[in-house]
Image (cartoon, rainbow, N blue to C red; front, side, top):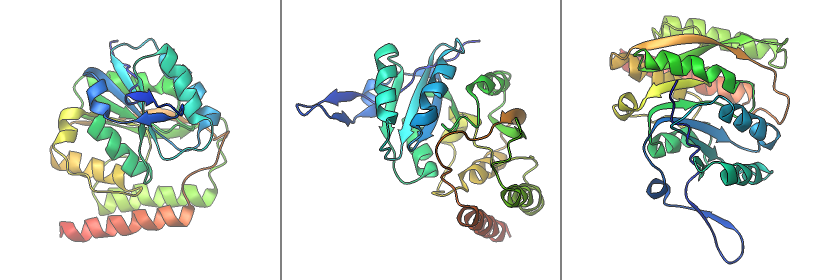
Length: 259
């Protein structure tokens, strides 16, 4: 299985004060088969384990882009440690939330295929080959269906109920999205399909927008099951009411625009 694992962390230089300046990302990155995008914000507790997991898969011809939202922990030090071992890992400053970070990554990625996942180890790198295999048989977009593993109870019953309402009623019935878990944070997409899209979302509705535009473009979409594990480090970046209200209002707006 060939995959261009090139952890792309934008060209970095040290100035006379010893600080790291990140700039001119595209000039230092080369074309590859796969780009793996990882939004980060103070995920030092899991980042090393995540990157070790990615590099232990034995993939080739790929890049990894760390899309950092302003971490104040040891995330950058962990990156620099990996940069000494792997020239294919890059750091991009990408503030403004997860969706904004991913849009930065989409613009800078050099892979023919792009996968993205969270850095908190609720999604495991060992599931990446499932997405890669699905893309390599001709799918344009691969979304994932989460299966709770190891008694994942840290997501409250109320949060899980809201997620179920959103996916099964709002998305399936209201937006005609024929998939079980559109908000899962691990997906893969063909870069040619992505170039045809006009993504505008800045909030948590990016996943829904991505799927809706793929459907409207006649893309071939697959859904694969992956494990979803308890969060062991750090804090979630979402709020139940804030995220839910954003998703529901965005869905209502989309529904009204379709009429």
